[in-house]
Length: 393
Image (cartoon, rainbow, N blue to C red; front, side, top):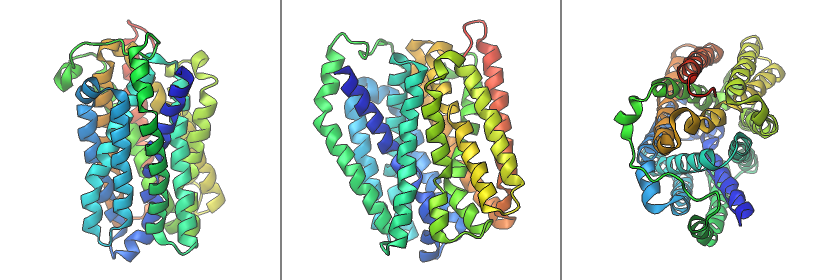
């Protein structure tokens, strides 16, 4: 029963990743069809992220009341509705309306499952959990590329992913009684903490929490910017075709997925703190390579792959260390707030970069990414010093 449950959790994270990379790979065609500027994609991501921020902040109360299984199932249903809603949108304002419920589903899945695994599993399983998110993000750009080259259009790509999401939802509904059985059993999955939520104010009073929130925001600022603009970078800076750009948009996700799978084999020995440091160093090398690529597609490919590989251990390592750094009794509340902070970064920075690229050049992306990577490094090191008296990451 325990093995089946972890398989279901992994599957749920695939469903979380499926929508995340879809807009970036579709946008080169979408914005032309809807007669919108390239930077308008930032508005969509901002609205999606607004929904995820709201659901992340409420995740502690919702999960405590309804439990993890039902929350995950309903959230996947919301993302499915969002996918089909996008596919039938013919005007930009319609995308804006659908974006909010689209984001509400993603935030609840993220916070609930991250805390579940952080409490009950090793860092190895946290890395593998997020590698399955990467599986979802890899699938979507290739599906979109297939849909565009096959004449189905970007809307057809959204419908195909919507059908895949529907199949995952059906399986979650069928296996929903499993969550109830596990929670009633005496297995290690049974929730351990039954305290009241500490809330945002209570969390901010805990030493180190502001550092991890800023660090997480900066990390997701880079991740979201690459997710949304990688395809457009290849299209604008490297003069790749729309079809090739859509496919190359998956490079970051390939790197992050392979990296997280590999990290699962070494994370228990190396530790969360050193995994974060190594990841930042590798991603920095990738950014430098892109900056020096001189519009070469092969060189840019290497750069985006390295950013993905470097970013692979950062997110799961920060999340996995949360119960250790701040206490198991506070982990669900703090992880929910971390998710909200992360999505604030996802909300505003892709839009900011879109505006900067509109009035300058999209080739400024490596400089933009480097600034936030350095902030992530600074904040995680300050966090390490703050919690060193308790236990290192």
